[in-house]
Image 1 (cartoon, rainbow, N blue to C red):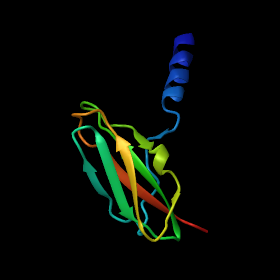
Image 2: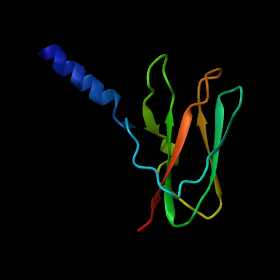
Image 3: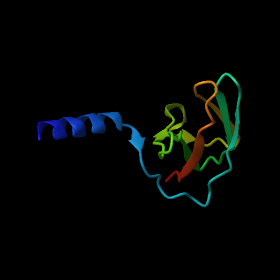
Length: 108
């Protein structure tokens, strides 16, 4: 029983800040433009609307397993400006570019 509780505690701590399922995608989701370089720098851009907040999620698949979705800390609840927003993410050089998903949320 003690090992089971320790496992649950470690699992909960490891997954803090991660999500396993994304909220429902909006009809107002703009397309992401994504580019990466050999040094592992990923550039992500999208056109925004001032009536929305935007959050970018990423998912790096593990070998033969589903990856864990995570909010990019630098792209959480960014308010739209009516212009293009550019953010950056970094991955280990030589690894594939993660999957990214943008979720807009209408400002009340």
